[in-house]
Amino acid sequence: MLRRVIMLSLVLSCLTHGVRGHAEENADVAAFMRSAMASLRTAASYGRTGNVGLAQIELDDARIAWGRLSRLAERSNAPYSAKSFAELIATGNDRLKQADEALTAGDGARAAAAIAALRRSLHALRQDAGVVELSDCVFDLSPVMDALRNAAARFAAGKAEPGEVVQAGTALRDRLQRCNGLAAPDVASQAEFRRLIDGATTSAGEIGRAARESDAGLVHRYEIELQSFVNLLDFRFG
Image (tube, rainbow, N blue to C red; front, side, top):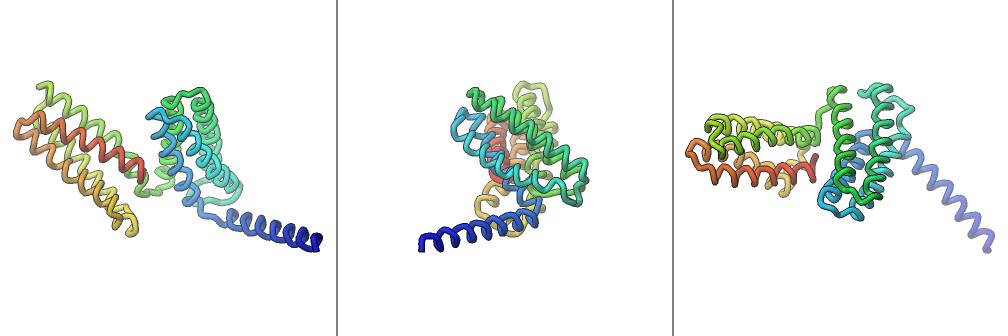
């Protein structure tokens, strides 16, 4: 009886391994990318705020997803070229190692920088292949927000006209509307996504109005609010 149980256990184990292997062989590259990106975003966030232990847990999850992605490198992964995909995997392995070493040393900021570099590589790969997703659009909000923050700071210091803030706010609003258009229906209908994207879009228009009314304090408040919206969008959907 014991022998039968052992044999049955071995058979089931082999079947499970075979099913898992077949599933990974036919897995969607985009799904593994999204899985890795979700863990990378969270790991970077924890790293920046000094929660090294939690960052390490998320980084471990990212490395598992990256390992699954790596096993697909030898097959055709259109629209990505074999060369660009292999380069991404190699770059990712290096960045993950750097992030892991930084977290082991207790340096969350350095780990976050390594993760950010890997995320840029992923987005660059998709951009070169002509693939555009919501996460790419959200990732690209950061430089537009930086331009608005600089315009707001110059306005507060009396070194910029209201029109500069208006223009920067309009650029951010246009990008947010583009991101909204790229969201899949199931994401676009989420209460959290709607709160973030609609709130940010509204504030991006209002900051220009505040500048035209010469209300530097209100411009600053909208700037802080917008930075929070952009950070949260990146954390959840970037």
